Image (cartoon, rainbow, N blue to C red; front, side, top):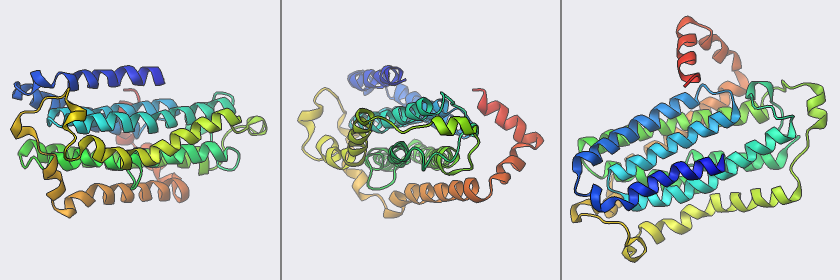
Length: 307
């Protein structure tokens, strides 16, 4: 899975290195921006309905790649580059943590057949919490600095397409928070649904794997804060000399002056969505059963779950 994630982000890097061509093809950039918006929101919507742990995380990868495509479509290549690096660390942590869960409990991937693993796998639980919080861009983790930068740059375009990208990205942030907390609640804090024998044989990760989790978690927490100004700050042109910008495309400084409300809206919606997901899957799980068992609920679930 990590190898596959590397290959798909290589396509984004190819777009970044193609900046001298794209900068003189404005209609191509508009198409790229539109594709990025559709990708990120559709993948996040599909992630809401996944029950396979690895598929859910894979859909989150597709959604984050949509953010990267949006950044390229906005001519913000340095923002795309920093999010590629930031996303690599916390997504590696999530995939390895998911693999640790599967290895520990008889390769069971369906989160509906898990639950109650928080006390049995405390180290893995901590690792997947750090990865999930970075994925949903909670301050001050890495995802906050890289993903929210893309949304701020979208708004700072002060164009219809920029506002549209901001709105679509903010909606996606809301959905991302919901399915990330859903994964944590069902797998770790929810009622146990596996067999007694599976829980008896479950064990946490060996020390060498714990060291890997610790390193990735540490980077997932601090990378965004350390690297944002290095890559996207003023006077960093020497570090990104392989990227070409037309003078009118250099709008990084504009992101610092957008209204504070616009900066806070994605974070507020993220926290709100995470709180809703935690409340529903901890105290009112029957709500989901009631909604998804209706005629419309079955059709919607079938459509997004099978994508």
